[in-house]
Length: 205
Image (cartoon, rainbow, N blue to C red; front, top):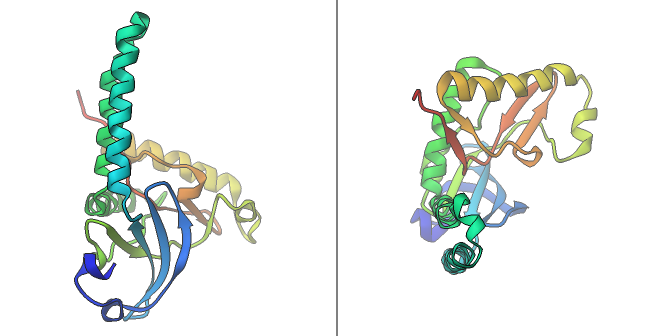
């Protein structure tokens, strides 16, 4: 984190905790900024770039072999599919792109109010580090989230559906990884999304 942001941890963070969540490419730490705001700091795993490049080579070779030796699969374009997957993974290795996507989608969400996104802390953003304000509520990956006092499940479900549809159909950009681990719920029906590494876009054509 210090190497990526070019300054000691203490210059930006009053405290920097252990990981609270982890995925295939990165892990998230709870931290507190000097100004007192609680934040989540996403950090790429050490050496993950090399792993991704190695996996990309294997996937490319596999797609070529499948296309050559199993003619029926050619209509599915295995090599094109592999290239799409590889490109998406490579884009996720630059957290500056995710920060930009989160900022853009946060503005879109604010127009309709069905869902929100934590604000990006730009001074804490680099290619391998992303800092954003802490998401309010309980992660929907925790079953207890749906049992919290005052929660209106029907309104929550309605907000989730409307959020996705308005993002995609009204604004042409949407969160493309809306699983329960990336959604936080707070009573009565507030939804906050995190992890903006995968965005979808729909054009007018």
